[in-house]
Figure 1 (tube, one colour):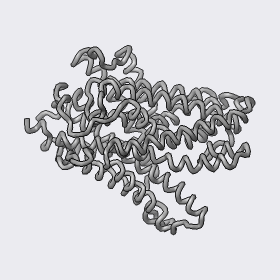
Figure 2: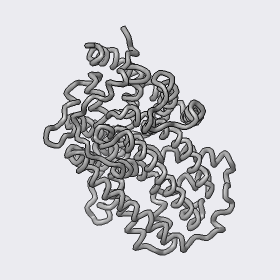
Figure 3: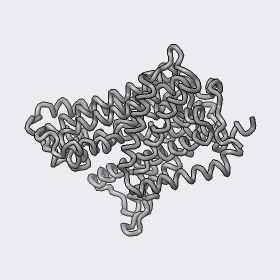
Figure 4: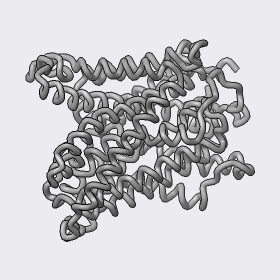
Length: 459
């Protein structure tokens, strides 16, 4: 019995049933749709107030550097192994089936929790809006199951998850067309904030620059690191991209680079307008505009932020559907999940499963600290991929002409591993316990089902 049997690198070239219609700009906007969401509209304020002060811009630079190291690894893998499934497929090819499956299992956790969290957050904003116009829902239908508060199901979170799932099933181009529109609206809101806010910046608000010292800057980097997550969703689109070897790396690095510039610009203006101590609030960007008396513009930003949070849900549902499709095609999940709708050329069954489970999590299950699982599973994936680049070079040689190349191997991958492990050990014991339980469940599922039904088992 071999739990580490591998798919040959040549097997990744097999024809795909998905429709190739995406270009570089589609992929950059897919990445930005996943990355730029709650991070820029929420986390910038709390991180500045509680951890780093105005020096949060340095925290963003440190976090961006660590993400770029991981993004470079994704880019080389995507260029050399251009198949659906992203990190799952890379792990399968380089380390073998069991490790590949566990990477896929961790990715499923990452995307499901991200979906549920965003849907719940979107529901919170929408419930507030409905309350404001006198159409608020009863307590029982406003949030996940909680006997103490009398709530049973978050109806709005369930409905928006199913709506996004329906949109994604219509095909990559249609789903990402809506995502692209929303991303441009989001850009407009951010630029509006920067342009208007720049006139009200007071440089004295930037002093003291690092009120919490270097420790605060480092802690801030650990906090805002997770504001960059989502660029990995680009790699799941490989089989729907016209030229994946060229466009996937451009999409990954392009979206991450643009997001970094936006985060730094917004943080500079935000901490320049409002003293950092006052930014520990849920809507810091809109608050800053209200702080300078521009209530109408603040209203536009608030409503726009609610609408554009949907881009994260679209990107993550898209990525999760393609991941489940790839795992099902390999036999580690039921083959039914690898069927492609003949009309839309999208993995309908896989996307429906992704949306249904996300809806249950968002609507009924109280997420609480489980949402922190997203952090640790993503970092673990990054660690595996960084080591994987070293092994890929050892087993299959240097990238060919035209393929993306991670510079300074093995130095950059080793630095990436060290940074990710450092961030992992900052997380609480309860998160580590939940992480180990999830991994154990993945191993059990593989031993009971995956190993026997794997395509490689037949071979």
